[in-house]
Length: 330
Image 1 (spheres, rainbow, N blue to C red):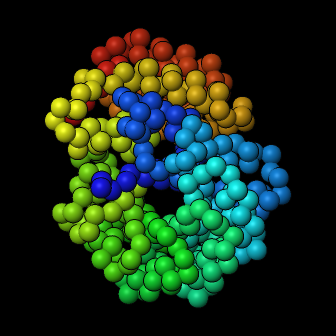
Image 2 (image 1 turned 90 degrees about the vertical axis):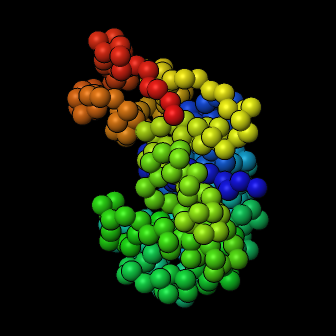
């Protein structure tokens, strides 16, 4: 059985419009195997926050959606997990990996990794409240210490965690430091549950390599983040590449203008007006890397303050640079 492909939980990016875009490439089944949502804060969810219903929209494929919860209060996390577990979804994921200072200061995200006892105690409480799959996403920890990471993961496994996703960098490391994929391979050998790796997947070829045997050791799920925003067809391309020769048919090029306008259409359809500009900017900050004049286009789009302005700017750019419209594949 092929190792599944996962979409990473990314703030302002892992929402329904991106899932719709990814699912729309080539044919049914060519999209991602699992879609993790952007972080949902337990407190506002329980308090009936004004935007929580948008975070909980699991379309267009609820059976592949994993709700990711973030928080520091165990009581809130248990109640929020139970609430989300009652919806149509694949599972619930607890965020123990976000290293953003604003999250860490509250005791949430990677702050949970400061104590294996505290983290295991949380999972022991959440597990009975969740009937669907329970998973955890984390980092190496606060130090480059594989033994601590292994002990931490074994504690989570022992309390009923069914999948662990590891972004193999420490809490203080940014993207400049290469992820330690050998740690992912080692965890796959040591644990009895699936271990997904997440970090610096830039192409369909790299996605397939990390999901296979080879240098990763035991095969396992692979999670893709920014590359899936830059190239929403990455999963379709990877699945096509590992299909039998007779099935390897696909368009020769991606119409970048068409994909851009389709994203704007989906954003207007499935997100509230308050989200439109911020989520447009976040998406195009990565998607525009497909263009020769990426920095110019990003600057141009960031000046726009209305949905119509963003659309007109894109149409104008592709009209003036028709050679930029089609991206050759493979």
